[in-house]
Image (cartoon, rainbow, N blue to C red; front, side, top):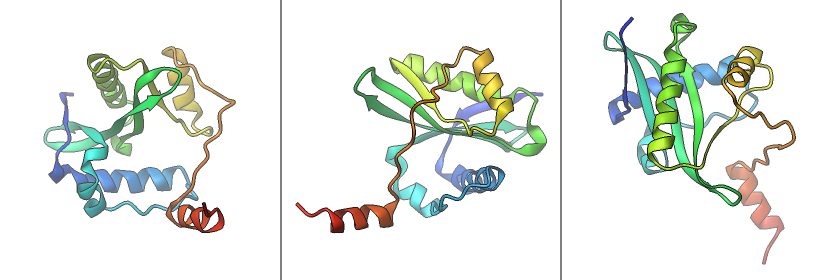
Length: 157
C-alpha cells in the first residue's frame, strides 16, 4: 500500500468537510456542526491540514493549528485525525500522526496536544502505548457563537 502524505489544498476541502461530518456522526457528538467548505476557505489562515492519499483517493486527513500555551510556549494542536472507515487499521493514521510530529519538531514546538474521545478506548491505548500523557483533570470550557453573544449581553462592561 503506497500511502502519500501531502499538504492539503483548497480542492481537498469538500472531502475534508465530509470526513468531519463522518467523525461527528461516529462520535455521536451533541455539539453543533456548523462548519462548511465556504467557512473553511474563508478561515484557511487559522488552520493547516495534511492529506493521506492512496492511488489518488483521499483516505485520511489531519487538521492542526499552532497555539501558545502559557506554561510551555508554542505548541501544535492536532484538531482532527480521521481515516476513512474502509482504510482503518492499515497504518494510515500512524503515517498522518508521524507527519504531525515531524511538523511540530520542524516548527520548534514545545508541545503537541490533541483530544481523544473518552469512549475511544482503542485510540487511548494506542496513544498511551506510544508515550502520550493523557490528562484526566482538565475539562473543556466551550462557548459557541450564540453563547458568546449571550455572555457579552449578560456581562456588560
